[in-house]
Length: 250
Image 1 (cartoon, rainbow, N blue to C red):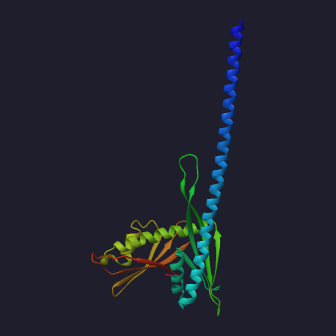
Image 2 (image 1 turned 30 degrees about the vertical axis):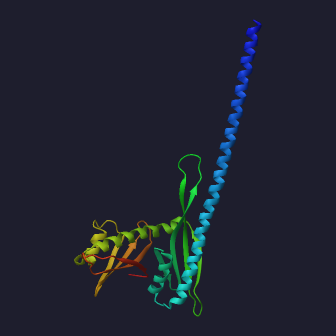
Image 3 (image 1 turned 180 degrees about the horizontal axis):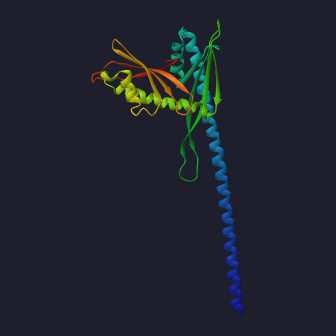
């Protein structure tokens, strides 16, 4: 009887010891998981903030470079000035307000950072910002610029138009010479006549160059942009690589 009681006591003590050890281990694990969660969140926030800061830093540098180019270009024609702005900003939508003598360029910019996570699924993460560049020129003064951040909705139509431009360049480049007409280009861009994103305004051929002017529209919005596509009349295979640049009007 005494031996049995001692055995029960030892067993109880052993179970309590194991239970306490498990509770302690569980507490250490929970603390470690909480720390890792806090640490990873803190690291990711810092990296995300640095990525956003790099976007803004690059945007300000772009604005400065553009104003310098505008000052030194000597251009006065609206389309020539839009061309200068586009070469530096690559903004898909550039508008001009004649009453304020101000150009506005809208473009989404992105940066990458590595996300820290405990479980699989981390790695490179892309963040983006919608940036609006404004360039103004007052009589007798140098060009000025300002950069502001806007909601993503402001840049989303421009991103759509950017994709439309890429597609138009590809299809215009692949057309044979005999198809480089207004009807031929319109059919190549919108064969079903349902997209309503492309409106081919004109096709002009001069010497060895064809110029196609198209109004591109972002579906479901009032945002559009006129683009001028240029390509050689023909390459070795009857085709040629096209270039594209935004212009003020079609």
